[in-house]
Length: 265
Ligand SMILES: C[S@@+](CC[C@H](N)C(=O)[O-])C[C@H]1O[C@@H](n2cnc3c(N)ncnc32)[C@H](O)[C@@H]1O
Image (cartoon, rainbow, N blue to C red):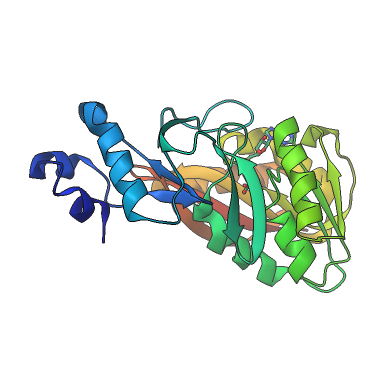
């Protein structure tokens, strides 16, 4: 059942038309996007979701765009248990996080598996913007990598990372709470650069820390016709060969999150 069908009893057809058809679920928290016109009915909508889906314990609404250096998208509780901390089950991992303190999106779970598949035996992987660890822990646990570095500047993300590493028994990981710009000459085989909003500012970090012949997974935001500019920026920053461009979902009308895989040459 989609959201519009579910709410057809309490909303008019035109009100239903203003809602998105689906919502994100993170752990036991349902995240809605409520247009201003439906705010008077938001609690009613939230309670309907709560009573329909037994796995949902809290319903929140996204109140702002993803913001700031730590890329947190603030939410407001509408119904249920008054907490934004939850445990998300993703790709066989349990990831504890607080939606109001850290970045997390379930929409990258397949992309994380794509990267996992590319990790070779003996690889040293550096995830320099790791959040609560969905890439780094996955790779440490399910690949034959030799060593994984997981780093995030947000102290809350770092604390959840430490907890998640322990909980998921991802023993190969070393965790850091630093500015990615403070890493130098790691000579990693694979470098994950998931900071799409500010990707350009950190291009030199990727070139500095990936070994010659190693691969960089470089995330950025761009419209279809802007992608060539992102590629040009990469080529300008250092010697490399572009291997692949993967669309990893949209972030607004006509704008997408991309991963550009490139090899240091
Ligand atoms: C888009 S999120 C990606 C998080 C994670 N990779 C994921 O998929 O859930 C970007 C992360 O970079 C972190 N960050 C921002 N600036 C940073 C910096 N200068 N050095 C290290 N981490 C930083 C933020 O706190 C945030 O957790």
